[in-house]
Amino acid sequence: MTRPVVHFEIRGKDPQRLAGFYRELFGWNIDGANPMGIMTVQHGIGGPEAGVGGHIRPAEAPGVSIFVQVLDLDDTLRRAEEMGGHAVMQPFDVPGGPTVAQMADPEGNLVGLVKQ
Image (cartoon, rainbow, N blue to C red; front, side):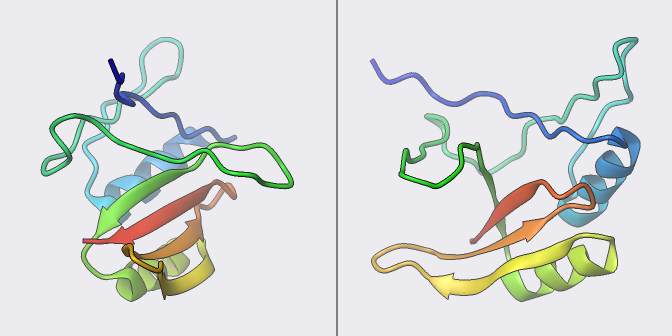
């Protein structure tokens, strides 16, 4: 039986700043930090019922990526830059797939964007 992805983490030196960034950029509901300093990002709406799918692919360096579905890639990249992040990859059409882009948050974490 295929098991779904059910959790992600975004790490950084200033987690309060990161929480504010993601609240404003994606409208995420993020609970206050617990005694360990960990904040909880509530699940979104409109996601796939069975969970999130993904890829395993070759790369020069190891890493894990998350992709967030947005309505407007260009607007999201612009807003991310205004808020201290930056565009890493401008929108492009994946052959036979969606339109995607990539940004970095204020701590440099890479986040993929997928056009809804």
